[in-house]
Length: 228
Image 1 (cartoon, rainbow, N blue to C red):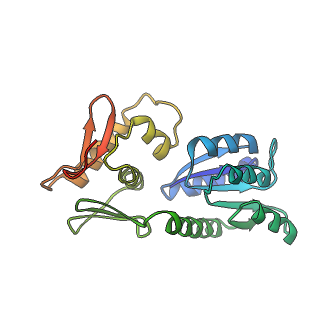
Image 2 (tube, rainbow, N blue to C red; image 1 turned 90 degrees about the horizontal axis):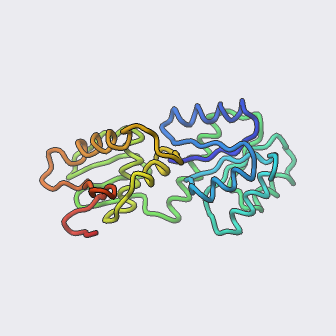
């Protein structure tokens, strides 16, 4: 899952980035509301954690602008203000839930997971399938021909993104932005290495290869029943 944290408190931001990254999520950070708004529009993360009191553009105004642009990404507000009226303003602006500072990481994680599960069930199928390959978003499991496949968190997110775009070409840039949160081309073979590992896990030992390399373009997950 790609999570964008918009928080101007460096210590609090590092705490959240570290904790969520250790869970296998791709985590991006913006230190003010304007940067957060731009990044949310550019990268379309799966979830947002937004502090209410931000420089440049406060968190409530930032989320209100996102909602005005029809961006329905789940938003978890963080705030040191405990007044009910302030929480109501955040929720009315388009926030989905609210955590008051100081908070425990376990609570942030639980509330964020609940928001994403609810949002996923509303807008997307919990299970993605192609031929005999099946990925369950909620259970975080992958099976092919009834056989469970063990994937690392990054491999799972890659496969999820490829399944979401089954039959289409997925470029290296798309994978870097959606799975790694990079907005530049790193001088490494990170994509090639992960694609090779993923291909070995989902294709090796099966009669039909599904993960295709499209020379000069990128990759595509497709079966004999799909076409580019």
